Image (cartoon, rainbow, N blue to C red; front, side, top):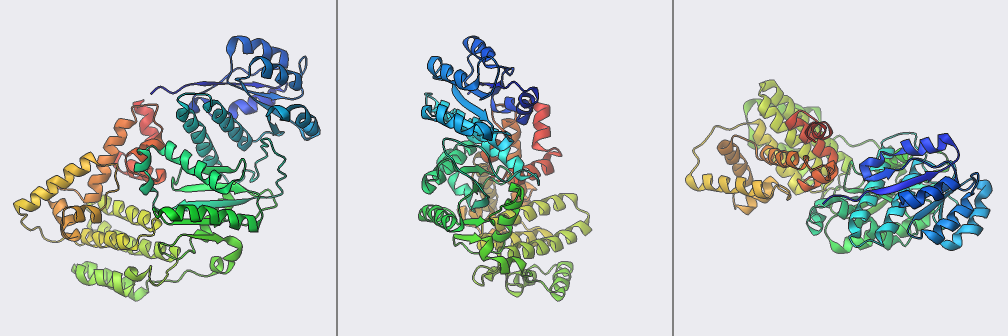
Length: 529
């Protein structure tokens, strides 16, 4: 479906303000036509008749026809245009008294990128209420907020506090970043037909309804699709209440464990980036189990300062290397599961970061051994399994994590080929056909071996022997193949493509894509569209 373009007109008598707003966002990317800015109110009224903008953002102080008179006339003659007013603090009461009765929104100078993203997203939502096919516009508004605010998280010096004001008088003395992480986000995919933007929009809408906080600044972090970030000025007690309401609502479904991690309240010009890093740090101290929980930095200071326990001694490292050398896979598996204790990590309440670091060390030892063999194909397969293990840690699934680690051992210690019976060949053929048709589903060694009633390590060996490819590599290549087809459609963005091909994490999708094609998704698309 061809996406609708919306027209945005900026009116300001200052050249640098007009140019700043023009360059603030890549408007074309969101199907918004950034019209030539107007320099005064008289010009706006002349152009509206001919060019019919959908959104007007105007300064309050302009020559010829000032912002107040301009807005009154636009509201009377063109009520379908969504209007925002830009004003300085000196004009605040004047603007409020003159305009708020008509539900006009305003932004305070200086207008930041956060202000503009929030305002235009709100405008698109207002427009959507009048449209028959409103969901496409709502998705566009949702995507703009998600992508642009996610880019701000990646930067270290972006102001932490949004100055946008929408029909209220919120005086934000400081803010906290609240990270809502849905650990098994893929369980929501099917409900929304694998439409990432639709799912993201509905999760954010749901959180707003749960919290009952007006104009809550919330966005989906596009680099990790299962993370939603809330920027809030609520005090500690109100944050606790809001967090528990969100947690209770999601927990009732039982679809996924949820962790809510809240940064310290900042009264200085901290950044969203720093608040996010702080929230992730406290999340890393959570117990590695399936329980949903709320965590606050201020309540977990001791955990944040405590040194992470080393679960693998030097002696254990030497044992792993020795077992790899002599090809003793059974004893090596026992050491990882029982000696190191990975199979008991949930029961013994290891911290998330302990599990993550332990898995990383085991993976590196196995990968180092493969590298010494000089088999590039085997290295690529092992590398894919290492990344998969890291993703499974994020899901808090200790059973599946152990299965992947055991598959990595089997991959490192290649056993002699054995004859495959006709029935096993048929099973492998059926499994490959199933993957080809259902590449977008959650596909793992455990789920597929259970589907065909075959022991997982045997199924893994037989699949590779029959197809010539490691199971997870076969799945990854099939997904990338489909992703390349989707990339020819310019109306589907890269985050959506990741979701459509079975990845709930764009960063992970990007790494897999580049590993297989040699190019990043962005570079590949630039060449094919």
